[in-house]
Image (tube, rainbow, N blue to C red; front, side, top):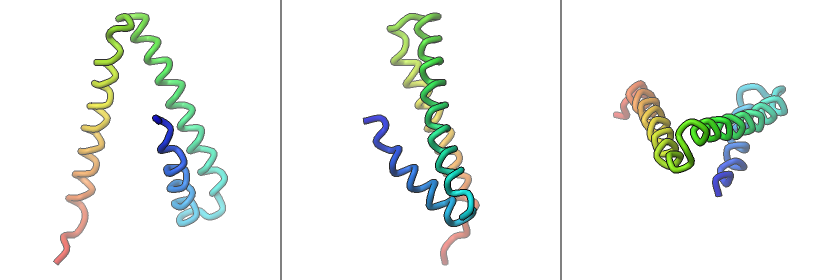
Length: 89
């Protein structure tokens, strides 16, 4: 279930690459999958670190905190981009 967004994001990256750098579609596609793999590896490393330092029972709230921080950052980014966009008349 967690990886259900990968195909849609892959299509999005390929479409952006076709639009902005048509000669680098393969590179963009490969970098996108590489970024997913880095995320998987860093998540496994971070989860192992949490279990090692704090115990298995602490992983749910630490995971929730990470999601909350990511959503807060995303909200801020969306808010800045919305304020930078011209207002429709």
